[in-house]
Image 1 (spheres, rainbow, N blue to C red):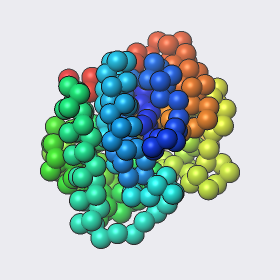
Image 2 (spheres, helix red, strand yellow):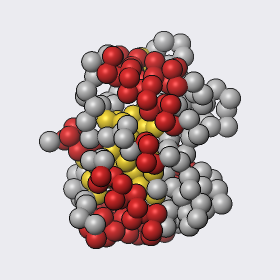
Image 3 (tube, rainbow, N blue to C red):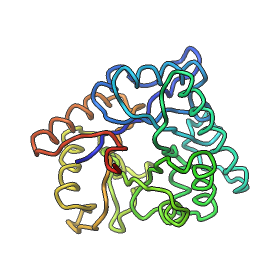
Length: 254
């Protein structure tokens, strides 16, 4: 069993980013921007309502306060400020969800916050503490080898591990940087093959063929990618063909 997740609600004001309406028909869980790297109250409200209509489980997608850089620029901050920034965003989406009769089930950091918390213990601790402080029932989504997973587990939080369908992985099992020409997979068919390979091998398969054992609960499809619908469709078809069931993220922990 695996979950397809995607980042949605990443527009702002009159600017639309992504193809949320179509994407929500193809995924099982979504991560909604909380107003800092993208999103605003109305965009958040609309994304929540759309997720409810499509029976898609809901996650908070907090990022750096960086509209210009879409949250993908590394920002050095005091770890207390990171803690408060993440807690603020989770609380915002949690409150908005309650207003429409929905519940937030998980938290997945966005962009540079995700990658920095992966390797910086102070940021990892700040993120995990923010989740615990708002609602310790929330799942925390992160990647294989992340310090976030270690801190979250020590705090008694449940961790869901993901892989990115459109990203390649280095020999150490970590994501190759977006700045590298080898870091991005542009072909949906190749992305689908990688997903099936990882799931069937129960781990990350590097370019050399090395298998690094890893839990994989969920597959990330980047909602701001211009070909996200093609990626989601190709991956769904590949999973169905391989006999792999797709369920919402909370289903892994029932």
